[in-house]
Image 1 (cartoon, helix red, strand yellow):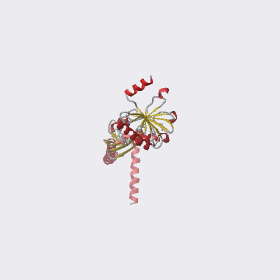
Image 2 (tube, rainbow, N blue to C red):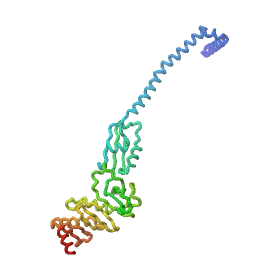
Image 3 (cartoon, helix red, strand yellow):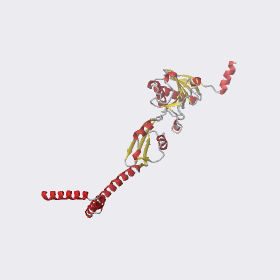
Image 4 (cartoon, rainbow, N blue to C red):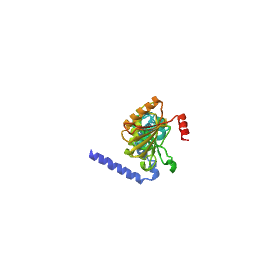
Length: 307
């Protein structure tokens, strides 16, 4: 077997040497060369027939995968706003999304950063769920009070912001905060905040009595204690508030609930006796100081007597 293969190999090499000795014209029209070329063409044709379907299949698979990826639009968006202040449409506007989201180009981390960078949003959670669902959940900042600088009239700085329960200041947006536009205003002292701007944080101990005051007053009906309009803190221990009915109330920063209970009792007495109060000091537990508002006729008589 080895000898026969060797013989055929040697014979083939001899034939090739003889062919090389021929002229180019003779080689082109050589029957033996034509047969050999035909065999080569047939072999490459068979290889091409086998390879083309494989190449086409690979190309089609890759093309299908790419098209499938780019066609994975997320039309189903699950949206939850914890406090219901910012709508789905408003959140999509913040994200800059005006059409279907593409799964292939979805940047969940970037979207989360965009939402949490918004001053009215405390935190956000975004999760993509195959094949076509995007879950978005946001936690909005809750307005507790408006804040302004008490000396704003003198300095010309009339910046007005909201404060959340953590003491963080953030801008007022009527589209988000329609339900909070009647919140009371706390007039800050210069030492209360380093810079009056969104993102600034008021110290916890500074805003603690304000938060306690708002939380405790919300437990009363407006018929018992009218809405608080203004809050001043002229001293560390003192609070001065103005109610919607014009009554001024002097309080201390401790025992807020007990003081509001005394205030509700005094206001009830004023309603029953039909004697409106101009100012009330609810700090004393016994015999709180009350100054009654005089009726127009009584006030006129008083002025006449003074003359």
